[in-house]
Length: 252
Image (cartoon, rainbow, N blue to C red):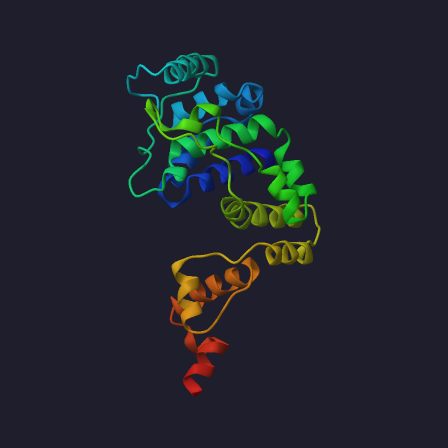
């Protein structure tokens, strides 16, 4: 109850999975009591085993040494922590950029929790974009430097969280959580939140591109979030008569 670290873990897991695997990652996170994550965070392969195992990525047979190690750890940890079997939707690889493959994102998440203990406290204490980039400065484990999937070697490339991906985590996880926690403890951090969003580069998606086609250019994430809210709450719901922009367009 009121375990903000556990809540952060679930939200981060969902957003590490993006649209394609977000729900599967969230179910994975919810199914592992966070105190178990704390206990196993000293050994990154144990975290990877828990995450891959729960996400159903260790169900097949594979001769790969790394895979075999993770599967052995998963079987041990599942019994050690009395984790009940659950069903999760299979993770998706189709139509994903290789850097967004669930194998890569789960390893990055494991390395984040291995290298950054007390992550929630660090996030609450940090204010600037530079501080957050430093917190989320993590890579997938070395095995993934020349792999995207188990037992399929690729050209070597460090699988580090990019600033663009960190920006998404800040917008979808950090900002809402910081705001909610501040309200919970009775603080008003509205100016801090606005300042942070103003530092984050403008998002790039089909909705923002459409606004740009109409001559409305957003300069940062604070402005893109405002445009997305406008689209979701007014345009999509045909509330043109309640919208200052809609009224102005109809006048013209």
